[in-house]
View 1 (cartoon, rainbow, N blue to C red):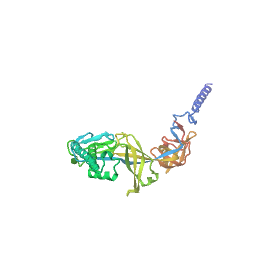
View 2 (spheres, one colour):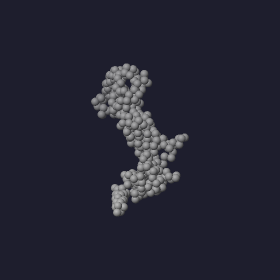
View 3 (cartoon, rainbow, N blue to C red):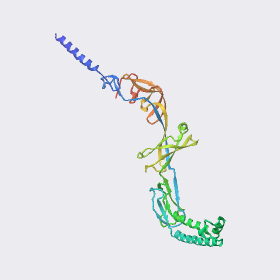
View 4 (cartoon, rainbow, N blue to C red):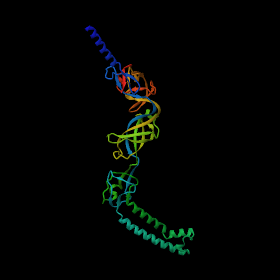
Length: 357
């Protein structure tokens, strides 16, 4: 009797355990899996669903920034420097006064030139009287007579001398021709311009900069003017800036490299002319199927991707195409809509029980 009771008890316990171990659930992807999440025989995985989309192929290289427009500003004539209003690294706006030369001698010259011009006006009137006209009647004076009278009175040369003097006075105030950053200032007030070989400073335009870089000969098939280019610094503090391919040198050098240039708009003060930068040239390839790089592993000299099908990992042999930092194009072996395993695929085998996290 006691033996029978023990048998019945054992049977009941086994039945309860069997029911618990066979209970199931449906995950959010619709796959039915056993409630054995913590079991050694079930692997938790993360997946990427394959889709057809545009793919940004990435060509990485190094480059150097340089000003697209660098203006060397010189003193227009040899005179004592009265003031220097800028310093290296300073940002200036177009037409801002950067320095001034002493105008004392020019102002005296202007007085003399104005006096000479006024005298020529009187002389012109006298010459016109000789021909029976007056200066007030120039609208009625024959052109040949008026021309002759201006030459004899020295009117034209006096007027030109006066205008030249006005221009020199304006040039004594040296202004910025464009917006930019000041560089290479050495001139000091009190010295004459010829002490610096008339050189005052350089002005680096900040609107746009050029980045010059080299690419492999094999990359020429991807290059076309206007394509996107991204530039970032090596320090880690520079934000990435976007530009466009500006020019491609049609010659290949002895090292098999092609030189190209891109234009980038600079608003970040941490980017300077002459700086070494990282360059990423982006070639957009339309309508391609791609997967994250971590999904692809090598098995027996073949590229392999695991997908999830009915709660198990399925091995797929694939062929790949161009890649970028994160993804690679799949040219054969996968279809859109498949769930590719991206976590530790090297630990899987064909038919491994998996559950999607």
